[in-house]
Image (cartoon, rainbow, N blue to C red; front, top):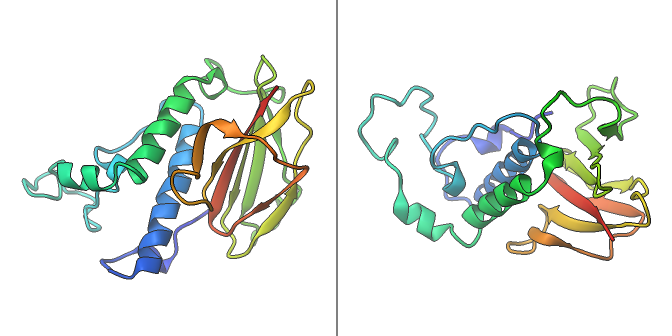
Length: 198
């Protein structure tokens, strides 16, 4: 599934393109943080550092490779906050850090469109031993996708932790926001994370 399009390359000052780039970086960070194994990040990802398309910049003793403290400070309340809070969330939930490869009892895929190469939507539930399951969905379509949510386990309710369609700081709420219904309308180029809680 690809979130990247031709609008996401090159230098620009267009606010719509910059907003889409920021949204996509956060989508990718969510995908990385809910994946099993050791997450691999580059220095500067936490503030959207760019190397301007140079994929072999190691010999440059310039701003391409220098940590940009000013950029970090400028993005502390938005980009950096989302990245750091999601890392903390991952660390506090064992369901993201299984010691063995996950099996069929550890994950439920909510997909009935595997053979459709035009599908750009993916959703799954990671099952937690304590019943605090995690539901994650990615919508790379250019339109909203309304999904029926699975029932949360053991008299729990879904709480919204991440919705990338919301503005910072509402796009990530560590303890979750109650009031999630039986369906969820997931925005274009967006992702969500729900947690089952009492």
